[in-house]
Amino acid sequence: QVQLVESGGGLVQAGGSLRLSCAASGRTFSNYAMGWFRQAPGKEREFVATISRTGESTYYADSVKGRFTISRDNVKNTVYLQMNSLKPEDTAVYSCAASRTATAAAMKLGRVDYWGKGTLVTVSS
Image 1 (spheres, rainbow, N blue to C red):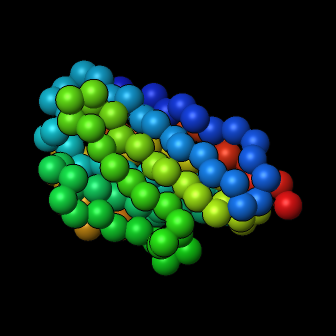
Image 2: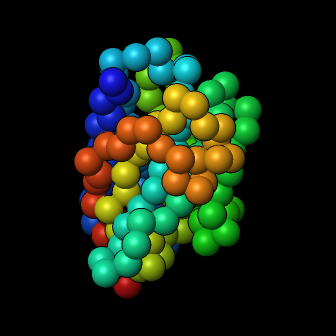
Image 3: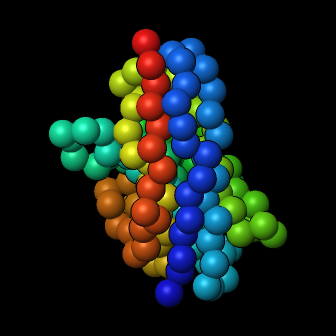
């Protein structure tokens, strides 16, 4: 069992930045591919970014590529999402995800073993 706790959400103006963090506990963090997904009001949950167990490989949704950066610290058992140039359409609940068996690439398709409860990001225009 892995517990995931997100933090760092909030209200920001368009063009601003936020950094989300996800602290993991319960198992060996470096054994898990990690990722971020989001769900906007009235929409289905969608892939945002994933990162491999070593951090060498990262994947991004086209809508965030060049603006968001995913990273991880396997000593601190934490994965981050740096979000720059935020847009109102980035408003959503952002959830951290972990997979013990899937690759970071496969996680894009929703192959997730554990989810965090999410943190709300609101971008005002």
